[in-house]
Amino acid sequence: MSTTAEPPAANAPDVAATETTTCPVDFAATTTPTLSHSAPDRFMRRLLRLPEGTTSTAAEARSAFQKSLLISTSRCLLMYIVFPFVLPAIGIAKGVGPYIGVVIGVLAMLSITYSIRRFWRANHSKRWHYTIFGTTIICFLIVLAIEDAADIFS
Image (tube, rainbow, N blue to C red; front, top):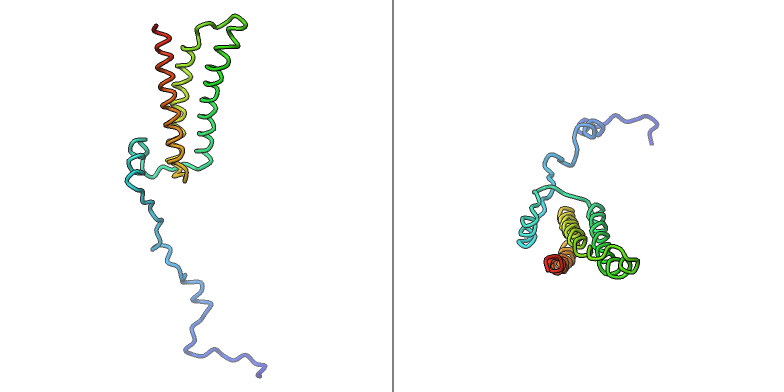
């Protein structure tokens, strides 16, 4: 072994120079993959009028779901507990149930639609599940709104 440093070979590349000037990954050539949606997904996105490329987070979708569920729950509590039993028992708010029911029902339907849109914008894995669940609740709310309207106009 020699104690003196040997000079580099004439044909050996300068490692320090090549490491600072070139990168093994060509970042200009890499692109972000585009999401390909199935035909039913594209149909739902058009139906919900979602703009292309606009996204939302799963947390925002969850928050919208919780708010819509809260509105639907409060409607049910008011319509089936407070208005038929509590308020008449204390002698107030007789006959206002259908009027308030229609207003709260419309708010609940709008809120559910908003949360369905959020699930789709977030491309949430459970978007189809919630769409079916939310649409079922909207159908029930439509039936209840028709019943409330019949009570109002009769």
